[in-house]
Length: 102
Image (cartoon, rainbow, N blue to C red; front, side, top):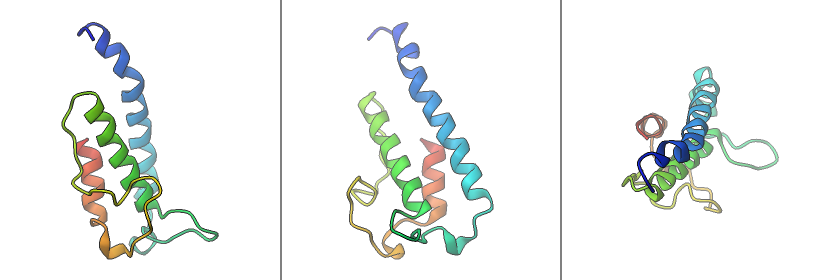
């Protein structure tokens, strides 16, 4: 890929990252700490698991583009991962910080 084509090819990904960042900030801004790992009624993933998954996916996308991005979290947030006790996951602040870093 030429350097001229690269910015145009990355623009949609950068836009998705920007939208995700805004939605995550808005969602987490007033959420009490005890709600971060709470599983919604009827199943589904906690909001912190979703943020971890988005961050892990972002690192994977960046790696595909040639950036050696890694969260260091292994398979904790991969699609289909088994739900763990909250103590098995990184601290919420670490997940947020990694998301901002990427």
